[in-house]
Length: 119
Image 1 (spheres, helix red, strand yellow):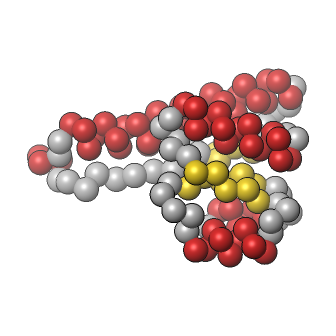
Image 2: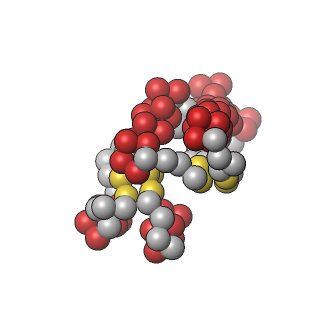
C-alpha cells in the first residue's frame, strides 16, 4: 500500500480512489488525517487529474513526488474483447500515466524544482 508507506516515511500524501472510499483508506484517513487526503478521481479524466494536483497544492503547498500507480486489466480474453473494454484499459493504463506525468511536470516547472515521477 504505497500511500501508507509514504505516510510512515513522514510524507504528506494525496491519493485517488474510484467508487466508494475503501475501508482501509478510511482507517488511514482516521489515523493520519493531517497528512493524507483522498480524492475520488478517474485518472483517465483530465479534470480529475487537475483536481488531484490542486488538492495537493491547496492542502500541502507543494508536490515533490508524483506516483502514477493506477491500472486496470481487461475482463475479456483478447479474442472476445469489445473495443470499448480495450479503450478503458488504454485510457487508464496509458492516458492516465500521460495526464498525471504532464500535470506533475507543470507543477515541478512552476515550483522550479526537479521533482520525481514514479510510474
